[in-house]
Image (cartoon, rainbow, N blue to C red; front, side, top):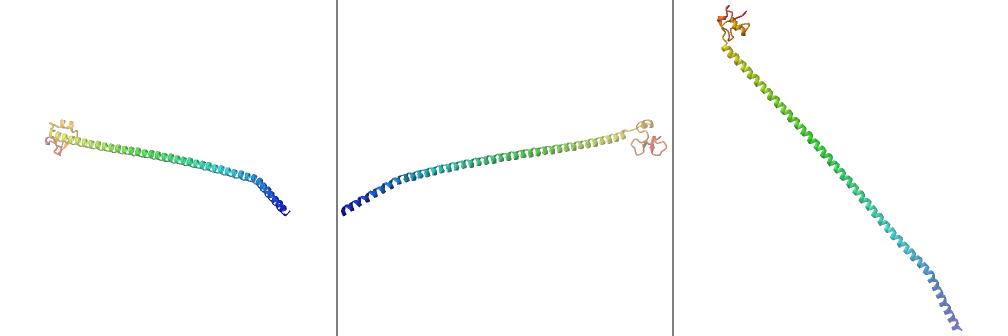
Length: 181
């Protein structure tokens, strides 16, 4: 009986182990499934988070690139506007300088023309004065009047003794003035 009891005890022990093992297998499977599901969900969530981060990083990079392109376009536009303004200012300064140079040249030409005209007028006046003086000298030298009537036609008040037309024969009172009235 002892053998029988030991056998029965062994059988009971084996059955209880099998039952425990099958219970732990059965409970383990749903837990494993839950753990696998959780792991899969966690991996899926990590993939989604990673994809979302990549999308956000991509969107951020695109936004930064767009902002950089806008800044470059704005800087380029400002540089072009500045260059255009400088070119306009330079053109205006050149036009003003040209106009001033033309005005100075015109004023210089006018001054030269005025000086030339004055010199010509002066030369003409001098020539006329010389011609008049020469004519008077020639006339005085060639002025020879036959009598006082002819002399008074040219010199109504008569002539002094220092005058070239003076002749002592026409000075009746010998006061050094011929043909006086």
